[in-house]
Image (cartoon, rainbow, N blue to C red):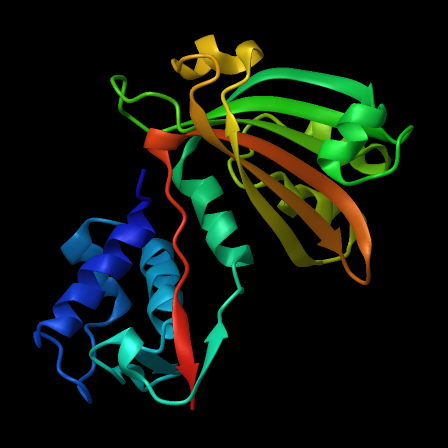
Length: 245
């Protein structure tokens, strides 16, 4: 499943690579790009962040978006990896439909604590849901996710669930008055668990990716953990490496 901002970023990267937007030229403004791709300006901004992170473009206020390279792999210097993904995670939350299946108060036992990377006996609000492609009744679910919110924020988060379309971390930020400064992500190969196979329309035990994201409130407090199961044929994860000048 390719989100809209990823599609826009890929389309523009291809246009840059084949010379439709030469090095040194300015890309169309956000409004024109939004109209061209039939997306929101926030989607265009997310796509611009992707292109900027890959080294293809630079952005300056009131000066526009300038094409800096035709190929993200062709820059000189040592390798570095861009890990600034908080905005991308937030955009994914906005662009996909969340369908809540269950909300419950839980205590992490030894098994759950191991999967979450927290201590046993800690209290959480668990929100279980599926991610789907909006307005597509034929598409299979993208993933099953269990989000665990620290019990200190659980009651207020539960009261604000209706109508909230972004990631739950934004609610935690609002309630706590603190910012999420880091998302720690781990991706492993697994099989689709029996308990969610029917909901995901996938075979039990079939190949899948398990993604754990730990949301860290500044300065260093784990306030949320999400555990997601993505059937292998519905999700891919790509990373861009660029040379450090």
